[in-house]
Image (cartoon, rainbow, N blue to C red; front, side, top):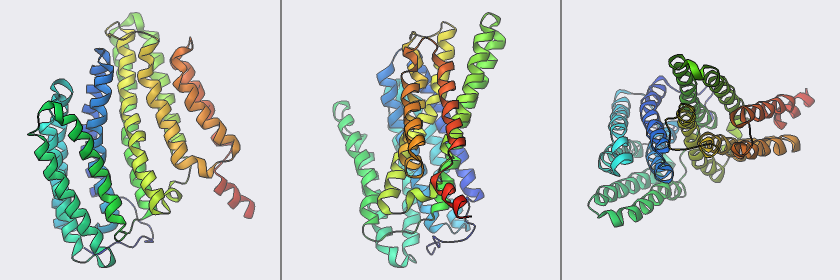
Amino acid sequence: MRPRDPREEGRAASTLELFFDLVFVVAVSIAAVQLHHALTEGHVLDGILNYGIVFFGIWWAWMNFTWFATSFDTDDWLYRVFTIVQMGGVLVLASGIAPAFEKHDYSVLIIAYVVMRLALVAQWLRASRSAGAARRATLVYATGITVVQALWLASLLLPDSMFTVALVVLIVAEVSVPVLAERTGSTPWHPHHITERYGLFTLILLGESLLGSANAIIEALHDAGDLGTLIGVAALTLIATAALWWIYFWPPHHHAISSFLSSLAYGYGHFFIFAAAGAFSAGIEVEIDVLGGHSELSQPWASFAFTVPLAVFVLGIWALAIRPHADRVVNTVIPLAGLLVLIDPLIPVPFALAAVVLAGAVAVLVWRPPVEETGEAAAA
């Protein structure tokens, strides 16, 4: 299991990686459904906190596998078996999401999470045998992850009053392991491969939003009285989702991870982008419930369920990837669009205006291509 060449030509996501991502669709979908139920029932703060905790487990397991794979993917039978074990852990984790939301019972979630992480430890130990200059880093990864997983299991024995504090400490410990490991001997990452993987996962999450659009149409067919309104929500959801896709893929992402610090910001910052994309579909479902009179939330506050995720997504991708490759016009319009979408519920026409603002932002991106592309065109 020798390190992959970070300058390898034509490096792309493997079929195993795409298969791995599909398992996360299940976990993300269940997390979004549970967030939707919590918000509809009026448990706003509790629902958001639980969603953040659950999504951290989903995101962190996915991200750690992704960065390992960009460095050491051999695609032999043993590598595939260890990867499938991690996929099994994701499915068990998905089954523990509902108890986490409903009863604050994280036991199944934590045990499944530990299974996934220990399978990755086995991969790191295997990689350490032929890692060369990165050997020390692989051993730090393996040791650090193992210690933190032991602490996760120990946290299940703590009383409820101490568990919350332990949760925060362990999350900080998890995100600290790569920082410590990479400082001892950097593992090679392939910029195009990594950013392609992030882009593919973003597409999966945006697909959840399209599901919300489809649900609006399905609800409309069962409720002729709200037919026009619900079809309008479906159409506007499609416009907003397409705008998020357009905005996300506008900049050249591979330039965003040119150094250790920039790759750290890009990798960790995507937690908010991914979480927002997943929460957007829940917000659409909340809006449908409000229109049907089945929600404890009322307008205009219910609309924040989808405008906050939209704003976080737009502002997040602007900060991580768009800002360095945009001119002054784009760097003014995109953050302004994010802020306008955020306060949209306070304006009389909520969802339609958000879609118009996002469509306007896309129009500006079409008019003003990335600075890099402009320079290349001028040179030509």
